[in-house]
Length: 392
Image (cartoon, rainbow, N blue to C red; front, side, top):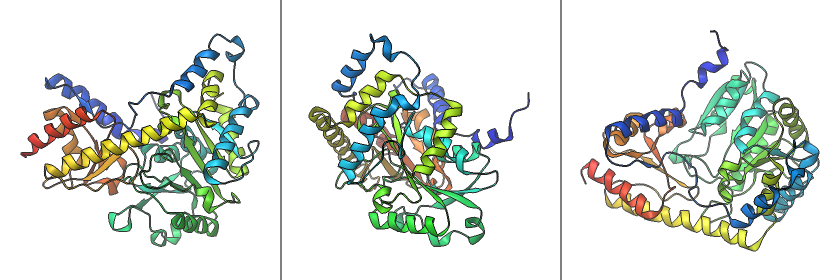
């Protein structure tokens, strides 16, 4: 059979590669796997959200297709959440769009923006689905390298003018997966000015808005309050432990929202209405849910502190992440340019699964990512195995 050329860049995926490695390790190793490769929270969805969804199940009025007009209450709740959190005025009718998770938005929007051969400017390392959406739109990826010496922020003045002449969009994402970096508002202001100057649509993927430990990360719309060129994707997966429910939304420039809506209209309807009611409960400020979000943040901060100290104690110097549920760890010698080999060998010999940095882009080489998605005793066991394997 013959398949489309656009599938060729999608053949490699870090999570699929590690899934195969996990299967091999289970057949070779008697130790149970400890999977630190996926950023899927192990914490429960807050009870009021589940109660709302459960109450909808017997109601046959919630069982039909959900069209855009049926998402009005959700869009109003999303707009109110942004207004309260960031002090931004948002029109729920024209500036908010429900998504089936923010990943759906980053995959579909390039279809509305790129013509074949157009460039998208993406972070390197970055979340793999960002480039996947560009390739599905027959676009070209220009990677913007992220270096520790620049606080894992891209340097816009290094982008060639020949690329900018053919570029249509830029995708940012801070707090950043995988490096855990936070971008200050001044950087976002620079990004907005750059995109205006070069006529680029600016996409900001913002799933970790509630997972910074010492500050409140800014929204890109605080740097572009007029929503002149920007759109932001927010997901309920991290803040409310709702990954499996697949709820997110786009918020920003009305023309970009309309373009994305046109793509979605050709591809899907929306989620079950009961899930949307649960999401509204999450966004409308129930005090118990606000406490759950705070507890979620404290849990990941405690795990971060525990794991960083444990890794440092076994001779692996890692920096303290300012945000997210990850540790971005530079590999020790002799593994510094062999992150995939390190991850494959580690899982086969210890049963501990991490994500190799090369899977997030060429500039991720020399690092691995730990996802802190287990209780501290399990994380401690994982680090003990790693320490023993490394000879400490």
